[in-house]
Image (cartoon, rainbow, N blue to C red):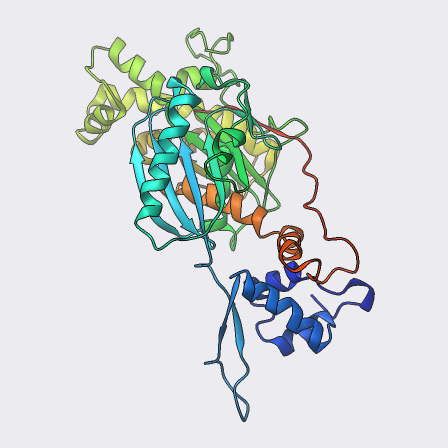
Length: 418
């Protein structure tokens, strides 16, 4: 970021961005980068200090005389409440403003019991987690749900896994108790972004995250951002049919969708049909670790069928890395091997020249990280920070006119997954 012209001087929110990224961490550096006068810099920094978004550190290096006061982003200046809901497991946590997990509870919740049961339970757990901390300021709430979501409204649509949630606008149900910005997205989108930002952002810009659990879904990172498509249906790989699936009827009404033949649910069904007494995926893990031949055959076949679909996605999207996450992918190496076998054989030579296929680095924590980042990216956006400071100071965030409004977000829909 070079020196800005006088007609585009930095606002308080933009100054915060400079401090968060480390591009400018003293008042003098902020002035040099932005072209702001010393009084203007002081005004913007004062607003950020008052909001608890930055802190001062006088221990910085000095070139002579008193060292300049260094400014640092205050990750402890608030918390975000997050929950990553799954068909079989829900993670509930508090995170700081850097997305670091402060406290977490994992629960087995029947999401089909509906929002009237699940959301009050989430809010009670958040209250318990907050009670153990010294009065933190709640800055926002983020949820990932296994359903199609109209992101702008936080409304679930076509909730095949959570049918009782279809058409539910979630933010109003939470805001009565937590009157802060509330964001809701599809679970695989937030998991993909959490995985990418925490583990891959410095390495690649294009990533395909495939969640293989009770259901199958995908999140596409293109150029460092979630690729949603025209209506948010990008990444809906679970309902792509495969060859030689055996004529299995999928929950969507089609035949041999990869979700119906390669998901955790499908693996359990096929093993029971072969006489194995398996009640949960943990039972399958036990059989895999014991080297049970029948189980290894079923799991590897699921991997090969999933590999067919991923191979097509690799040809179309040309990601730098395919990350396999979810309970099944994280525990079943034969499935990962089956995916690799088919992808490297059926994708084009160019698309696989440097392609990596890996298991999740974050594991179960990716959903929590992604939910936290979804909130933080929105509540700390420069225009939102400016508006909040203007509301306190009467319009002195650094804009020459009315306080900037948060950017209008185009209504998008994130697809359902498992």
